[in-house]
Image 1 (cartoon, one colour):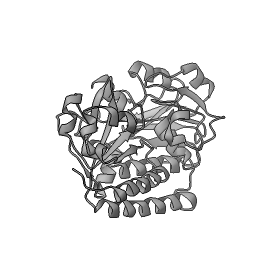
Image 2: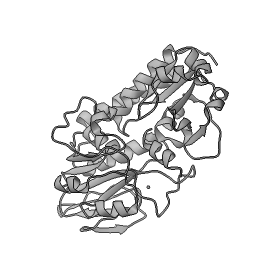
Image 3: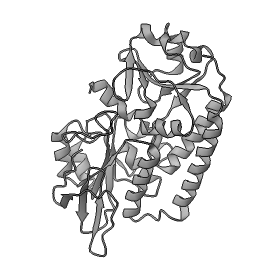
Image 4: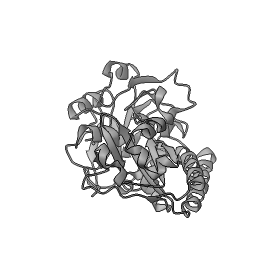
Length: 333
């Protein structure tokens, strides 16, 4: 995969190495919490991680640590494409007790991570292509390569959640993980968050009935115009399943279709969602000569595309936001 495309996937694979713990492959991907003797969890690679005690010091990829935090599990360390301080998923969080051990893709301060003394490290993994299959030799998302992943696994075992299909399914896997870590996912705050998520889903579905077309993009002068394929992005697929009309950008590649600036006017939409990770601002997009010709840009219907974690809290908040955007947008293409 093109390095830029790989970097953009999160902005928008992991062999479960478990040095120092007992791990074995299994076909059963259901979550299992060990009895009084310890803890175990079977991740989406079919790897079962077993520990003597329920892990309480969690570190990992921003996207997952932010979601677990929304269920009450504050991470001891986190890393990702950006610093957690700049990641919208951590907006409003006090990060003073969290070690930020990586702020660019594949750049992880191993000494700082080890100093945080995590019991468990969590990450995601993307399929190799639209089939949803995960390559056996793929590193987990956030790791530069398998060699780096092996180094991280020497610090603490790794649990991997597959980021494929609909985010609705990924959310449930994160709930499974949270439950195994001791969170009450049936009642209380998680139940309330689930109800908010269901209400936001209905709100977005109602707003989507307007039929306005939506195109999510990542754009920089250096990397060009990258258009996301809703069917390949779990977050966007969730919205698509709720009725949001996404423009099919074409192309044979997985997740993204990129074009040169001269081809940008050939991909019109009513609404343009611009990535908040590294992408050009609405003002910069409007100032670009060919992008300025897009109907959505001419109408000023540009809204932020927030890449947030697979959890009820974060998704409900953004779906309400997106519903508002679709509700005020007009058909212009």
